Image 1 (cartoon, helix red, strand yellow):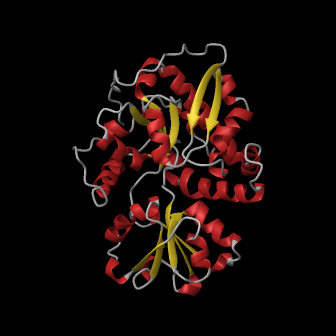
Image 2: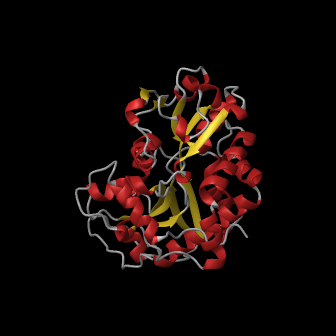
Length: 337
């Protein structure tokens, strides 16, 4: 895969910490709040996987990938979790920034259209002529032109209704729009919690309809990684074991999340985690090839598809965005066995 040597950059120096120093401290930046899909990191703490690697890990909540990526690129956090498509744009706009994806977690991105059967949305073929609610900053909305292009959807027939994140699912529940853009494991559950029968909810995953994009990955500061390669691999090994624990017992994973977010609902977060595991993390490709790596041909297609939504300032190069150089051994990455 993309094993090219990772460059170091003098602009963002991080003090190297010796591997397995007694209780080596590591700060990890999430891209969002403590919800079900973040369970693997907390299970890796609670079940001793980080400790077994000599690591003392603190996990910080975030406010989106555009929050997590600069934290890692600046060296404030050595590692984090972010959308690789946002990382591609960040690196194009900030050439040489010391950050790269080192382990793919969402083999399929969570981008989805969530609609209602009673509003005429049973599948992707029903989007033409519909009213689509879309928050302007939404990741799924940002990539909607790719979905439309690869499925020959006449966007001119769709009425786009800008909505805020707090009003997105209520607008759909009230019938003010026919469908919304969002994440499969969030919009679906939010709609169900508003009392919409689940058999009235349609989820159209971009990844099921020709969109080759990857989703979120563990990212690392490349200066830190160059100085501490074994520490990075140790982190990834522990995270993979946390994913395996979540697969084996999603309820325990949700409980680990709620222990850090007491205002949450363990049943809701168990379902959110299960949706993410089934649709985004433990895909057929991951079952066959293990967690964490990517398919270079698919990545090349993904980059070409990104040209439909983003004008590159520099020629894109997949080796700048992802490396498998730090992945742990394959048996640890077979998370669905």
